[in-house]
Image 1 (tube, rainbow, N blue to C red):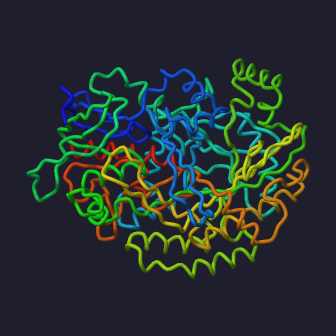
Image 2 (image 1 turned 90 degrees about the vertical axis):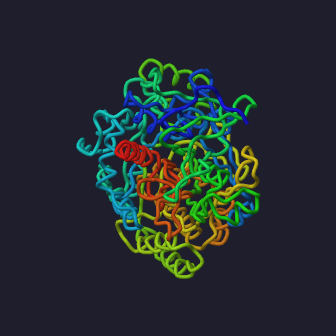
Image 3 (image 1 turned 180 degrees about the vertical axis):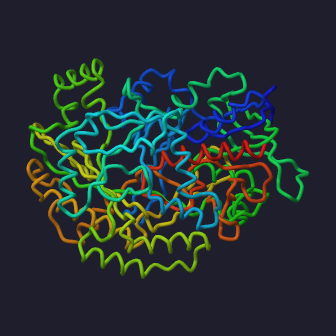
Length: 596
């Protein structure tokens, strides 16, 4: 092992993704401190094709599976998904998953954030995080979007001077309005502004887009680019962190982290941290790094010959991830569809010209409309099935903090202000089970996702070799509640398609197609995929309840090691998680500054 000459910082951040860049940029606001960021990937602005695919909204899926910007993790085979391993994308490079996600900026329900505090975390609640949602963003809206989608923007609920650019949808079609009207006909009210802590109903989403250029606003463009020339902020790229190093004579008050070992260009190197080490490696790699560093369940560490520094059984457990299935149907060929980009070269060229000249059209598209529904919205048969399945789940074997979270979820099943299923639509063909689109046809698919899955999985090392991927086991669909909710969601989409609003232009159902209830449940198991929102594996909970970090985000048993990323979130939220992680990272930066 050798040490890189001169690499010593006050604060050392491991991971240059969303949370890591936010914390690093905020700490570097003080010119008297030095901040280093260790990142395994690169600065994607130097990779032309990657950079283009990152920037253009309509290309939002193009970088998935590309190793330059995606770790391309796979889960262990999932019994609940009929033995399939599930692809689990995670962003790589400066910006992390904000380079490859779908750019949505949504907030969960206030009750969910208040639940963080109820689970034993003073100061972590809706009112507190609301300030940091606003601090992270600058909001801009267009009259066209607010008019077409009947949005009633409350500007006081949004930020006006934060680094991240946030705006209203830029590509609005007849399908968007029809989706809203169809769910209204099913008793799901329209919610014109979801940023104040109530996301129940059908609504139009906000997105992380530059309002002028209509390009992706990421942690890299928002937090890194404006600060990259600062002399007190250093990025160490192409560097794979392997473990946190601790002083051997640490006091009883907690083990003292003194640096991070990493591999770069085939060499094992060390960077020194004079004040703190901050792990921001994400919900899969943060627990992996903790275990490689000797912090975790002594049984897991012992199995791989790693000396136990801090016996902390919660590390790597409590994994929660949103998952989804979908329904795909044919659509009237007169309607707008993303399919034309693949089937009609002339139209694709025209769309590109429209985007380049006016920043409009399909290439400006993101998913725009959603419905978040409580259990009462679903059919009585399915609601009863969900309720019975919830009664059958035993929590006795789980740590106290996980048990408390699941008990809250049980309560939310009967709460009309708590959503259980998320819906969205996008005019395009969604490939699943080997199906392919037919020439000359247009399609629309409906996303059906769980907001509060009852499954609890894990992430653990598979060896003491740092470059080996961890074993990621989300335990997707390991209970009857999650299966019944997704099947019920498909059932509700079918009712939406049967309304006058969507029925006017949505035609034959392609997938799953006719079948029995049992066949529908098998379809759910065969098509289930992740929604890319893993969290909970270094949970902010009391240590006695199975927690890994305290409310100041310090790892239990350490004096100066913190975790700042989605892994600290103790309970899944009914939102796409990036806006929440921005808020958490902003709050974390203030906590760190206050403790200096």
